[in-house]
Length: 135
Image (spheres, rainbow, N blue to C red):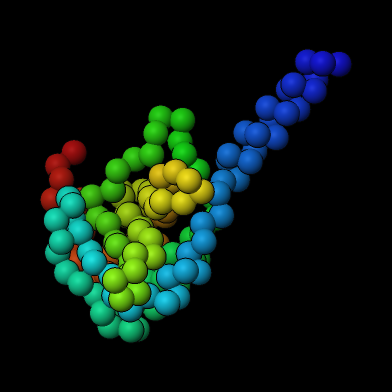
């Protein structure tokens, strides 16, 4: 009986980690600009209210299924730092097939489909930093 209880507890914890951390991307609604970095170097600043709003909406549409992978959170080359004035609201990284962000007291990640990834890169308005990589 004890083994069954322990196994049940482990399954519940694993399901919680798999289901992930619900990111609170609603905080991006107050953003007025986004600093775009590639390989940690500032590339552009987005201040168009429409583009900032669309990027915030993208993040909110991808606010579930965040977790810390067992192998560690991957590092994205393309990162967005989101601000309201001088106040840092959060970040969003775009990798080859994943998104990254800080939340739930850790660095989190989740998968992203090729179509969604292409759409957000188009919203950002920079070239795909992974396109020049050779396999």
